[in-house]
Amino acid sequence: MEEKKPKADISHFEAGLSEMIGQRQVIDPLLVYVRAYRNIKSGSSNPTVSFGPSLFTGPSGVGKTMIAKALHKELGHRELVETNGLMLNNRFQLFSILICADSDTTVFIDEAHGMNSKAQQILLTALSEKKLFVSSSISSDRSCTIPLANFTMIFATTDEHMLQGPLLNRMRICCKFEYYSVKDLVEIVRQRANALNWQYESDGVLRIIARGAKGTPRLALNRNLETCWYVTISHNRNVITLQDVYEAFHHLQIDEFGLDKRDRSYLMLLCEGGPSKLCVLSSRLSLPSLTLQRVLEPYLLKEGLVIQDDSSMRAITRKGRQYLETTSPLFGQARIGEAHGI
Image (tube, one colour):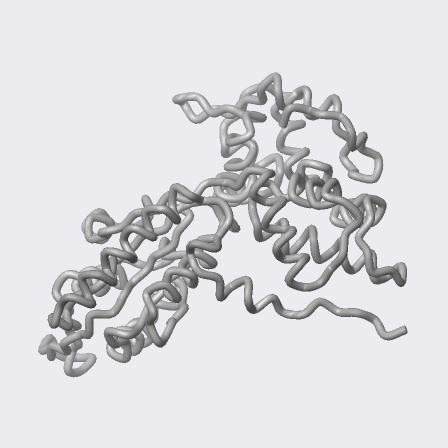
């Protein structure tokens, strides 16, 4: 029997805004802005009509890139240019993108907080004046001015405070992304599984896959669902069962709530050692402080497993202690049917 392999879910990324699941606090206002943009553009002979610039903020994996692509589709632009903040620190890369973009182009900058101050200043001028000032030579203070087209710019970042104030103030549209509910993630997993014709034995399977995704579609789809499917195929079957989910999560070393050994070690340190500063936790876990702040802590804080006081001391909550007492570190040993209130 020929092994079945996953195929690219292209249609998922080509969906329009109205077809998106969850993040209504982002999608509903964007639909209003899009309708207004279309109406103004259709009733105006002014070629300078533009959309945005827009800022998408929120945790990693919550759909900022996906919705940026959907927005690009809704605007009807011909070309989507995708890049990230670190790449734009090369000014020649940045100049190339800005000069080549026209009024039918959407420029999407992911991880925008990675841009240095010079790149941000160039973008500020580009957005506010629609001009680019380029030195005529490396050793000369003289510069020439290049007019820029009225392109659409979308920034995405997990930390908007790393962007300069003047650049933030240029944003016409600001969207705050949040973690997804389990209910919405179930529907997202169902949508992907159906699109790929991956069968599952019950909605309970989808719920466990969704619940172990820490509120993010990226983990629900690219980690949990795909691993479950590979486990199913490895057993020469084509229907994902509850046992396949148990085995997949066991291999992934995550529990039924999607927490892994690093998350658990973080909670254990707080449980055993009491309230601690970030630098202490970073040292004892041998992880950079930024990794704790941007990767581990956001979900733990959101779920109420950990709290942070005004002096930035971290402490485990009663809910966090209950989690450690009732949930096994390996999913294969956990008691799936119990509700832990997380």
